[in-house]
Length: 204
Image 1 (cartoon, helix red, strand yellow):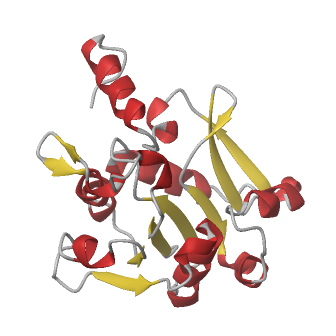
Image 2 (tube, helix red, strand yellow; image 1 turned 45 degrees about the horizontal axis):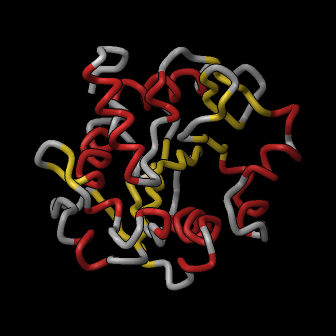
């Protein structure tokens, strides 16, 4: 059975949220972080590694204390997302890294499972990227054969360059599931998703 490591990136600066830390913002009684973690914990990952940085103490208090989650503090979180990915995979032991964003509170457990099942189809690809109407989504999955390449990666903004360098090994999973692209970066993002819910174009 393939072991999938969930690496949850929760160390960002949240600089686009105009002073507020987006992961601590509430949605229907729960923070964005708690809602994101709820779905992740409903999946049978071999391990869940949460990478913390800014507001680490406040986020740590929101994490379940049952031993099922490992937390890692990224002292270099201000340098960008890549440093958090690297901090997570240094601790990961699974065969596949599932790079989860902690600001995607609308993803469901079934969404993660869909990607994991697709990865297990053994189609000769070992990177998986969800694609909604041409827009790349998250989470992105990497086989652990990319560990050294990711650790040596210098682009601070994530692993898109690694995806581009290995295009022949990438499985672009086309889906009509909007949730794979629903992350929260600015306050109007929340307004947009609530508006979509009211118009019944998307159900939270």
